[in-house]
Length: 194
Image 1 (cartoon, rainbow, N blue to C red):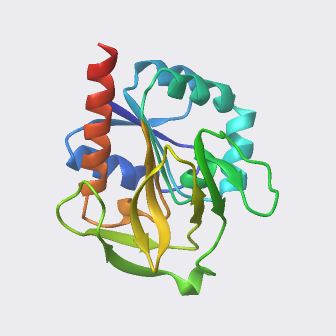
Image 2 (cartoon, rainbow, N blue to C red; image 1 turned 120 degrees about the vertical axis):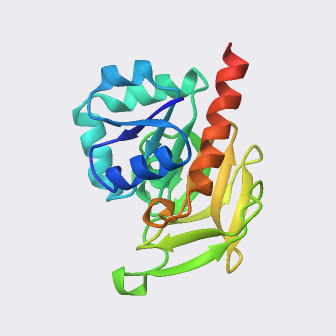
Image 3 (cartoon, rainbow, N blue to C red; image 1 turned 30 degrees about the horizontal axis):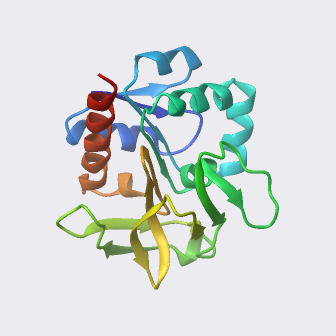
């Protein structure tokens, strides 16, 4: 399985390390043409507005939409979750509009309100270590979206078919169970396309 990490901004090296620990071949994606050779793609954290601008500048908007239309899995973490969302609270223009959810940016407050916790995630046996840094929140989801975990009754992990989104940074811990979960999604998707 060859997984790309969109390398426009964010914790690219950390995602590559986690994906490799989970058993994938992982590459930093800086050019649209690289998408053709991938089985799945991670959109990392960073600043969603900046990532959106860079995606538009380098032609990634249509390319990633086409990638998703082939049923190839996408995994958005923190700002990556915002990039996947169909709706962003406060009327900000959404980016990829792939996942049927409404998100709120920086819902957990400022940098100093960052924290770590263990989350129970549906489909993963052990609790997942989650790092929340100026994290967004999933405010509401459509009928086809499966809520995989909540924190204080707020949605922080969700899946819609081949799309996975989390409010936090799993790549900043030594726990790569969420990356392994994504690899299982990639294997399922590849098998269904074969």
